[in-house]
Structures are given as C-alpha cells and as structure tokens.
Length: 252
Image (cartoon, rainbow, N blue to C red; front, top):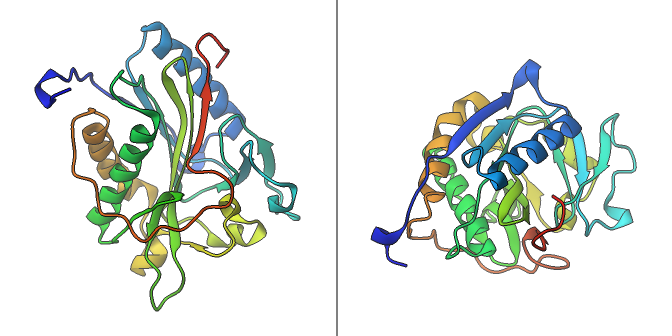
C-alpha cells in the first residue's frame, strides 16, 4: 500500500497515573481490558495508556522458574497473559500500553518494530544513542567501555481480535537495584540501564512524556519510515519478541 492510500486515525493519549498516583498493576490490567473492548467495538479511538506502576514483577508465559526473583523485595510477582519472560515495573519507569487496531497491511512484528523505533527516537531526543539487537526485543545501548549491551526499554505485547494490549516500559530514573533480584527477560549476559544512568543527570518520566507522545503518534500512523540500523545480532534465550497472539473470537 502506498503512503497516499494509508488512512490514519487520531491516537488518543491517556495519562492514567504517575508519581504518587501510580497505578496498581492489576487495576491497570483491568483498565486495559476495558479500553481494549471499547476499541474492538469501535466505541473508542485507538488509545495509549501512559502510567507508572508501584514495584511489581510480571512474568510472561515463557518465564522459567529459575528466572523468578528469590527475594522480590516486597513487590508482587504476577503471571500475565503476554508472551515473553519476566520483567520489572516500578517508579521512575514510563509504562505505555498502546491499545490500537492493526491495519491489514501492518504485521505484528512490524508493529513491534514501530514501537521500538519510537522509543529509539525518544532516546535520541535525550542524547542517548540506541538501536535494536536482532534476536532480542526492546531498545538497547551498544556494548562499550562502560559495560556490556544494556537494555533501556522493554517490549511485550498481546494481540486479541486485531487490537494490541500490553506494550513498553522505558527506564527513566528507575531504581536499577530491582534488576539485581532476577534475570531480566531471561537474558543473563547483558545489562539494564536508564536514561538517568547513561546521561549522569536526573531524567524523569515527566521529562520524556512529550517526546513519547510525539514519536508514537508518528510511527503508529502506519506510514512508511526509515528504520534505525541494527546492532549485531545476538540470540535471545528461547524465542523472539515478546508477543502473544489470540485467535479471532477468543476472549481478550
């Protein structure tokens, strides 16, 4: 499909709760399901929920027992219905749940790449160079004198009845000590970082919100784009991007 044939629709952004109003994970999951039903029914436009969570570990369907935290530090460990392995959400991390209908010409992997590209652009706005690592989902910094490859944004999605759920988590000024309690995304040979850690200054969730909105609106308009060149491929344990597909007619 050519760019002049693509029909775009407004993307609605809803800040569901930040800072002291951070949203409990299970409450946010309920909100996702409600918004998903409305988007599927056509009674609500495509919507991106933006929020923070209190500390919580979420385990995708491919999480192995040894990857769970032995000591979760008081945070809940919740099994979720997305693909992939275990990750962490907490204060100082912007979580985005795009709940959007995928056009016929947009494949699921293309959707994931678009979300990654938007987050790569956000990092560029802040002065942090990132890219994809083929075989590993999310957004990464290249290995350098400071350490091994480091993930700065995680992605895990579910698609039900042609509409996406779950989404991404961008580390702004999150306490990286939480990641010492488990094996993030089942990848033991790489690190985790944040915008604040890389820049040596405090970068808050509020600081990145305008950039996140702008770039998601661009890349989820479904128009062609030039992808950022990848870093060298590295195999991720198990399968590829953290995606869960649901057959038409199945419950969300």
